[in-house]
Image 1 (cartoon, rainbow, N blue to C red):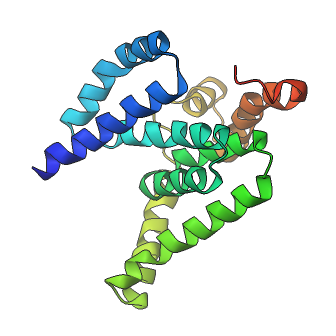
Image 2 (image 1 turned 90 degrees about the horizontal axis):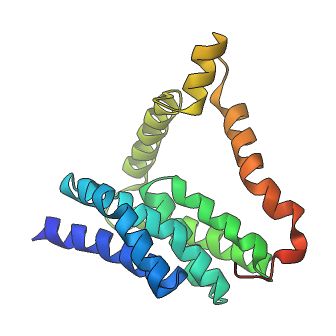
Length: 186
C-alpha cells in the first residue's frame, strides 16, 4: 500500500502541475509526452515525477502570488533532489523577491532541522556529513552529459562547475535580456 500511495503521489503531483500551468489541450499533450517515462520511473518507485512537479509548482505559486507555497515547493523538492532548486529562479519575475528568498531560507532551515524531532543532533550531523561525502563523490560523475562529451572531445579533465555555470547562464540569458516581457505569462 505504501508503494502505491507513493506512486500515486508522484503521478498525481505531475498531473496537477502540468494541468495548472498549461491549457487543457497543452496539458494533455504534455502528459502524453511524459507518460512512458513517468511509468518507467513509477515502476522503479523513483521520485522523478514528483521532482518534476516540484520544479513546476514554484512557477505556478509565484504566478499566483503565493510566496510561501512557492518557497515550500522549492524546499521540499530540494530535500528530495537538488534539481528543484531551479524553481527558485522563477522568483526573478516575482515582485517580492526578498520575501521569496526569506520564505525559501526559513523553509530550508525548518526542513534541515526537522529530523531533530526523532534523532539527536550528533546523529543528524553525522548523517549530513555522510550525505555531503557521497554527494561530493557523485558530483564528479559525469555520466552521459555535455560535460562528459566535452572531456572526450578535448581530452581535458576540467571541473564540472564552469560548464554547469555556462549552461545556467545560457539558460537564463534570454530571460534576463528581455526584461520588458517579464510580466507576460507566455
